[in-house]
Length: 362
Image 1 (cartoon, rainbow, N blue to C red):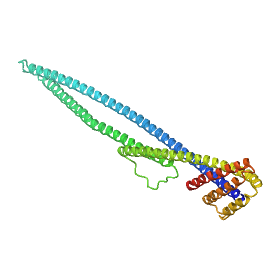
Image 2: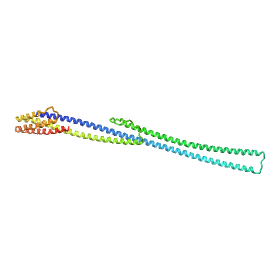
Image 3: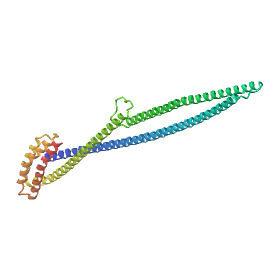
Image 4: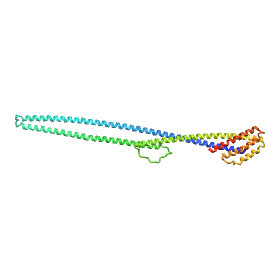
């Protein structure tokens, strides 16, 4: 009986150790779940930050595009105003030319009148002829000077208009090119900043050893965004699968802990009942002590220092029939304690396969 008590104590210790291990495993699974939850929260925060950055970039791009469209509209309005001014100047030049032509016609008419008057038979005095000739020469010179001035002014205006048009066009083209270059530079800077922020926000468990790629073009940026979204979805799926596995492991460990606790309670109850009832049965039976001693000697052949729960359970199962025989021999003297001992032996024999199965599942 002492050997059986010792074996039961060993089993109880093993079960308590197993309980500690299961509790430790459960604690580890809880820590893993917490870590996974933290990683999921970090991923969610990163995704939210990326979405915010993308929205901000889109807003900035839209604002810049609106500003550029406003600038282009202003440039177009300025061009229209310049064209209207040029048209007005041309109209003024045409009016001036018409006035000059009318003046020339009037001068020609006056000269014709003068010539007709000269052709008349009336003869002028010799003193009046040189004065009249001088007046005619002066008038002709004035007409020639006026015509030359008008022609020069018209040429200058045409040259100025021709020179002004290409200069304005060149200035507008240069303006547009500068605006396009500035917009491209801004987009590249924004893309680089977004990349750097994403690299800084990545978890430390996954360091990136690749060199920083050149600033992507719009198509490359779209591809990169799609790849990042796919990677994020895959990471989320992996995290969900790991969470499910951890939950299943936690449930299994909790079930095993409950089973181990139940078995330990059963063994403790069997140990207590066997100790009390076996002592009473041995005292009442007297002659049955030899069989119990033989059973204890058979159980003592197994090493008490053996840690294997399966060997201890097998030894207890082998000793159980001898204890049952001793209890049966003492039935005439003490029927009630014998029944208790029989029940305790049956409980010990029933507990031994459970210990074997728990040890094998480990």
